[in-house]
Structures are given as C-alpha cells and as structure tokens.
Image 1 (tube, rainbow, N blue to C red):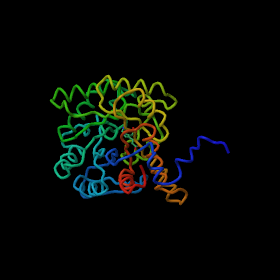
Image 2: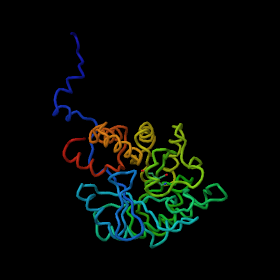
Image 3: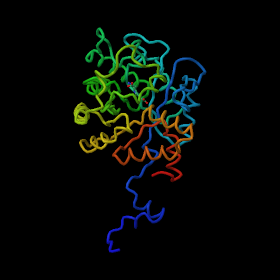
Image 4: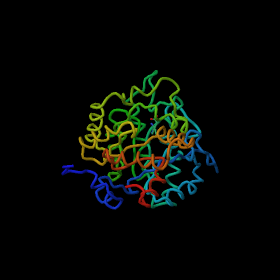
Length: 327
Ligand code: PBG
C-alpha cells in the first residue's frame, strides 16, 4: 500500500501513546463536593449517591481524612440546615452549618482549599434559589442575601466562593460586598453557564432542596441554548468573576469548549450528581466498567477544555492519575 501518512504509527505502544498524548491531567485540578448537615455525631450515606455522605460538623475529620489521603487538595462545601425559612436565613447565619464547618476545617485541615457553594435553595422552605415575591423569584432582593451569604462564608474562612443561584448581577453584587469588607483577594468561581437540568436530581435528594412548586427554569438556562451560555459567561467576566464554570459537564462539553474559546479565565466543569448516580447504578449492575467510564468522562472534560473538574469521583480520579492510569 502506498500510504505516506499512517496515524496508527503513533499508537504502536503504551510509551509512545503517552508521549504524544494531548490531554494531561493532575490531581491539583480536582475539586471534591462535600455535604455538611446540622446535628451531632452523624454520617449518613446519601441513598441516591452511594459512597457519598452527609456529615455533621463534628465528624469533619472522617470526611477530610479520605480527601487528604486521596491527594485531593480542594473541596466544594454544601450545607444542609436543620431549619429552613422563606428568606433562607441559615445560609448567611454566622453560626450556620457551612460557617461552622469552615471554621473547623480551616483550623484542623489548613492545607485543604475550601470553596463554598453560595445559594439559598438548601436553606429556603420553598426550595427556590432566591427570595420569592408571590410565586416569582425576586432577582434584585436575592442579590443582597447572596452577598450576605458569600461574606459570611469568607468571614468564616472560605478560600473561594462559588455562587450557583443564577440570579442576574450576582457576581458583581458579591464582588462589591467582599471588596467593601476588605476581602479583595478572595476569588469568585461563578457557576456561569448553569442549565436547568434533570441531572441534579440526586443532589436535590441529598440536600433536600427540590423546589416545593414549579421548577428552576426562570433562572437556570434552557438546555437548547448555546449562544446564551456564551452571553452568561461574558457577563460574569465583566462582573469580576475569576473562574467560570459550566454545569453539568458530561452532556455539555460543547459549552466547555465554547466558553474556553470565548474567554481567558480558568474554566471549571461540574460532573453533577446525576452523572455519578448513573455510573454507580450501572456499575453496580455489572453493566459497565466503573473505573474506565469515570476516567473517560474526566478525560473528555479536560479534552473539551476544562481546567478544573468538580466530581464526586475526585478521590478515585486523583488516585488513578497518581498511578498513571489516566492522564
Ligand atoms: C444549588 C446547587 C445545585 C447543585 C449545585 N449547587 C442544585 C440545583 O441547582 O438544583 C447541583 C449539584 C449536583 O447535582 O451534583 N443551587
């Protein structure tokens, strides 16, 4: 055969394949989501997320030991309060569950970088991500509460805040509030391109945050839209975001690439609860090879352009990376 170009030449062995590999990954790019709940001395496995737990703050060491042992350096914290109300007041209470968790983590695990999810949905009695006016989520009043929440997290020791509510103008509101209190150096990771997605189902069970009526489509994005995602990303750049996020990851890798090309901020993607639950369920049935699927999902996010990868599999992925089984 008269073939000058033979792509297979570069696939001839493991050493060569790794030499020419285009996507290289490192555990420093991984972020592990972690749930803290009010109460004492409890760690509950989340039924829809086997292997993931809700911890009370006094059990923080149990959670963090596995993170540190795996070589994961950053966590994304979520809170599940005992009391919810219409204004989500536990979200910005100085002794709220996330604020207490932060103080403990920063004292006992100072080497772990703590990012906090900033949203009201886990804290509101109605389960929406903001204040209600009638049955509508009131954007501008919510901004105040989000800024209060972000500030209270930073005052409790958060290294970075990550607003996930999808209100208009929240990056600016949070940036101004943090700067006004002297926290100029604390970065904001914006859940900038966040779609209204069925992939969040298991998380809402974990956090008890499903909306009591309606859905989140008046603030989270319509998944048919691509250009709107770029608009959201560019807006958050203008408002002072330091890192952008696309969420979910797996079905939205086109958006990872779009946002990567349209901006010059570091980019995160969030492999959400539904992605994890689907893999766990089919692996549990013996239908797929869990490790290979998880590695392929992560590599495809990095190939699409993600710089940071938020995953319930972060601990396993860090191990796979260190052992050279991926990346
Ligand atoms: C809070 C928030 C959600 C997730 C992250 N932050 C739920 C939602 O928007 O309904 C989802 C995470 C996951 O599914 O793993 N707004």
